[in-house]
Length: 360
Image (cartoon, rainbow, N blue to C red):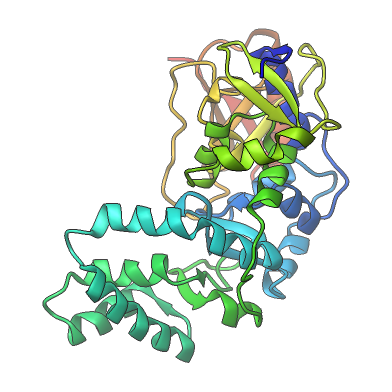
């Protein structure tokens, strides 16, 4: 199945083009989230920075409105993490990603709760969430009173992982206090049942449109699923095949953009959780160093990472009334453009300016 070789740099440009990071797009926030097959929403305000970097004239109110009217929802999906997705994708992706979500929960809590206890806990948890949204703290207290012999944290997390849930508003709304995350049932929040025949083939094709060219292992890393080899084998006749520098088989949509490897790339600022950095098993197409991507706690929009020449080159954070840029190394001629872009982000986030910290 060998095909033409694509260098890591060529894969970088293809990824950035599809992620709207090569050139900002004119899509709506909802259409962008749909195109990206969701955005990491673990930090609830992170998607605002991610969309600011991808769209022309992005207005936070547009995204908040879509979340408030439930066109977009924040649900536990790919890799067992919270994603901002369209309501249609939430209903389709939850059944597909269920095996990975369950596997992740049981890997962390199996010693603390049995399968039989899981069933009892989630049955009562469904009743509790049908009454109204609740925080994990509330659930922990209720479960502890009813089943004091079972680990309370395990029971609360069983509800958030094993039941299809969303984190309802006001969490995720721009300019609003975020507070503790509450949980609501996904189907009840949207007002429609989960998809009973979701298409994994369709999701894999959409993954390639947003993240390709990619290997089978890349798609599995993005989704958290296993066993996708047979899906790619089934789709192969309609795909174009390439080979990576390491000799891996890469799959892609025939008409998807694959810019020249030397296509110029402007500096881009990313939130602390952005799928462009986490959606491949082999991340050399965007992380070509040993530096780890930091995952700080918080609600988002106060720190993140930046790309220079298309690659992960450092971090940024709001410090006082300024946006501080911390590169991993010397930036050379790229520094001035990075500061200019940083000043635009600073204005969007409501601080006075941006500056590069000394490399130490």
